Amino acid sequence: MKNNILEISDLYFSYNNENIFKGISFEIEEGDFVAIVGPNGAGKSTLMKLILDIIKPKSGTIKIFHKKYSELKNKNLIGYVPQRVTIEKTFPATVSEILSLKGKFDKKILEKISISNLFNKKYMDLSGGQQQRVLIAFALISKPKLLILDEPTVGVDSKTQKDFYSMLKEINKNNKITILLITHDVGVIPSVAKKVMCINHNLCCLDHAKNTNEVLKQVYEEDITIHHHDHSHHNHN
Amino acid sequence: MIKALFGGLAIAIVCALLGPFLVLRRMSLLGDGMAHISFGGVALGILLGINPLICAFVFSVIGALFVQKYITKNENADAAIAVILSTGVGLGIIIIGLARGFRTDLFSYLIGSVLTLSTTDLIIIFSVLIIVLLYIFKFYKNLVLITFNSELAYLSNSKTKIINSIFTILVAMGVVISIRAVGILLITALLVLPTLSAIKVSNSFKKTLIISVIFSVIAMIVGIFISFYLNVPPSGVIVFILLIIYILTHFYK
Image (cartoon, rainbow over all chains, first blue to last red):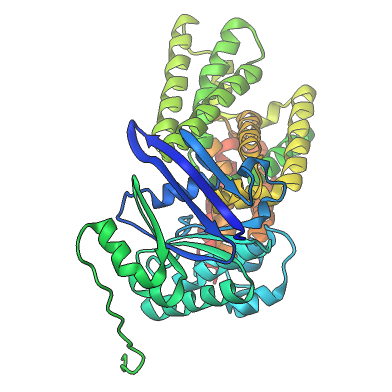
């Protein structure tokens, strides 16, 4: 019997008199790693904000761990990694100060995310990839069962992206954390995610990651085929 | 002089503690906007014979909550601050006209008069200091997280909006008591300069807060002494010392 972490039923949402979602429904099972794709403006980030109760739907139900978000006693079951945090460049907090805002944390998390050596550095002095790792560590401190990431690799180089996705895959596999990942990096989906979901306003389809090409065709209404290139043998000067 | 020193010390600490949470959220001019709308409140208070600081506080809170509501919808504080600033100053000018001219007591609110603090003023100022200290101590993590990322803050604590609204009211209180020290025209300096200087020489958020307080207190105490003996308005001297500190921190490596 499947254990659904997330159940969305007949969801309607509009913004400035424009319908963003008109009755979408889907379920995410425990342990899934779902990559969410769709064109810009399709409503991917909006969907995440609806799930996290940051904004309210017009109608429909959203249940996380079989309850509405507001009814959850332990909201720490959900971890969220936003897109790059846009803050003042002079923000002086260190990585350890930021992580301690969530509470006491297990240093093993830092080692797993490879940020142990960044503990006493200022967050704003880190590279983009390092900052994203800190945000993941922040989300993992509360030991969530569901991790939602909104385009976490924007502006990050390809090597760092590859390491980042490998880390997510490991977290999903070893820690049994369900992952929802909004991404435009469609090339990585078949090798990293278990399932792919396309969002484009009224269109919402969920399929196995191996069928990514077919899903993309539905979303973008043109033939898009992913070609996987292995750049590991190239020399980069 | 003793009242000025104690009152000034408390005001310096309040502004230095509130400043980082404004500057690092790119809301440096919120204090300025609140101060200018307070001008309207002060003028109305003098005209009606009501305590001007109470009127200033009411105007300041209304202005701040308006800015907060605007940011929630538009994520840009500048325009909202400009609206409240203009409203306050415009209203104040109208009231000056109704009061038949520019009165000396209104002028003292523009440039500050820390050397004339009364015992009642001290009670109000120290009450605000205690409230601000307790609030920041209790909600420090929430306030830093709001500064870092408001979405993460909201997800970590569902009371984030309330915490933020109360913080805004505390800023209004800080602005109002600061009017007595540096006046409406120079409040921004007291809120912003200690933070900007502290950021240059600190390597953590906590140290930024502490160093901001130190710089603010030094400028206030030294400024009051110098202004007393030179017989010049203290607000200008205090701000000038803050400026010197700010310039000196640029040489720190």
